[in-house]
Length: 160
Image (cartoon, rainbow, N blue to C red):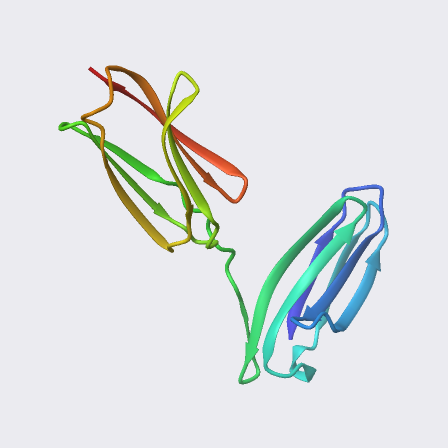
């Protein structure tokens, strides 16, 4: 048995569904605008597998995944978005570490005044560790940018 609850603070009707990974719907309920919905749902009727609770409305959708194994339901935690770690070492070496949780194609650029002085594209590793020697770069202000899944992370550094 699972407790399903939705607090609808919008003026729009929301749809609550429980689906399996093949998009088969096992439960559906419409929740009127500015209404709350709570219900105990018998999950014992569901076979072992992966499921998600989807709450959707106009221009909105949210989901929470769960699994059923041996008649036990477990919530699947959301994958955390990893943030890269940049270290500018004393010998003008840049160390970049990034745990590519979502297995995106990652691009790394080093720029000076919006000019790309170095680029590395289509890195698909899960655990990215890159070490760049910057000893041949002229003195100045630089920025390293990591592009991953539509997000840009940047780190500024100065070579003296």
